[in-house]
Length: 88
Image (cartoon, rainbow, N blue to C red; front, side, top):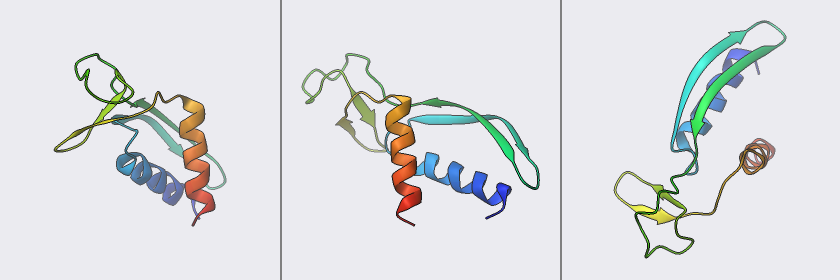
């Protein structure tokens, strides 16, 4: 897989991941053998405005719903990315 194709796959996964609330690509540099992708991501919303949800205040806004979630950190994200790549 070429670097540009890999970056597109990463962006597709970020867009589809339920734990990523938002992301913005800040810088993308792809060369023939290596590349750099810098992004700013928002993972979950832990503002305390849905007190009846399990795991309050952690939650995710879906298109038409709000669901409970667990606290997410970068290690969780990297593990989920690794699992997705391994399951191809």
